Length: 387
Image (cartoon, rainbow, N blue to C red):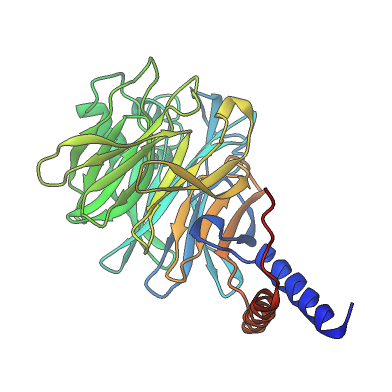
């Protein structure tokens, strides 16, 4: 082979190697995950503060010696092991501790601080429950702090104040008409306050800064399973979008995303075919991103993923292999932030998942490769078509 042929061959090899490592379209983009926080206790929802600090809700750890109530996962003990943690420039700090937590005595999975949001410059966090609100004063009544479960709080620094008792609202009004059950799960800023999904009460609530609660929507059972609304996000059109976990037996592909018109209250199914949704978020590109807890269903023990909802209603895998993810946030940097190992005390993590962008040197090599390929193609003899 002469020197010109060698150069052409090297150009072809270089170009093909570069093309194999670069994303060729949005669907083929490459994403890389980085762990930015570790050692968390049942980490759940995430939110960025006004200064760019990332906050994560920790539902807590084992509460030995606390009063016990029996819920959907068996006996659970009350304690004050919940927390709010900040992540800033690689520094991880528990800024608020001693928050209400109800933790399984067997597995350590907890209901406690569930999500964080910032509204008009003020921080808010949500505390879950996962039981009939009456247990707070009955089985758990030996500790007055249990009344802080199923509630919304505001916070500034390490100081916090109870704003609304969502458990009492569920117990008194029971919006979905079933047995009272409250588990406030996610919250997001809405046009008139904070929108809260109650996974136990199968409802979407609005809470004003003054603590007034109202029902926005309820979600009926389907195919014999509870709706279990989880993720909530306000779309580019101003409508409210809610994803569902679904209840037992957690059938794969049975989770929908609902759209609620904020003016008329009309509720429609916006997207279908998801599995065990735990959170949703609209991206700056106008696309809706969906966090699945377990791609093959909770009972399968499979890993979860981030899915992109395409304009035609189909789903596109963005990042998989996530272990029990619960919270999803999209930063101003375009990266995805996800809480993983969410039902585990002490092993929880937060991941930053970002698209890989080629370095300038890589682009230069790509252009060089294209040039060499082009030269080779121009000099290549015409193909002979045989009959």
